[in-house]
Length: 175
Image (cartoon, rainbow, N blue to C red):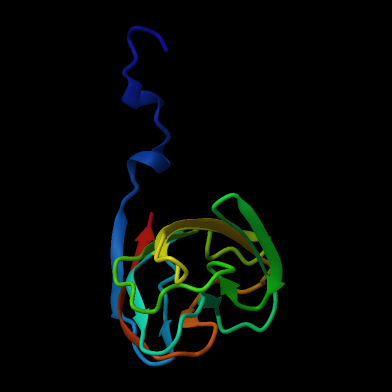
């Protein structure tokens, strides 16, 4: 950078024209909550789930894209243990969550969600309470999806199909 250039002059236009737009705020209810008709006008999506809880036993939260039955690969870590599996549904952890934990939060990044010609990669991170001992656990991981369709819907449920009693999903479009 020469002395005559400002740092702003070196920033690509894509970084200076960005921003986030709240697409939807949705309450979790029933056994599955689906965010549908996702606009195809953003570069990426960010989804935040806050206070997810359900009425019955402990279970694993799950996410499914476009209600597909195949094409996902989950990989993640709980503490220092690595977990991975091929699945049609993306399990957030390999361990159950405490069903009454209303202080949990999980943030998802869906990169290049409109891409129909190559593998899309996603990541997530969050905090939840484990049923054994009530300890807090940090979860993180990622997913690759093999699909020729853009992401048009995201479904959230539990591995045991328990009914949600609370929680909020915020979906943002990122330019």
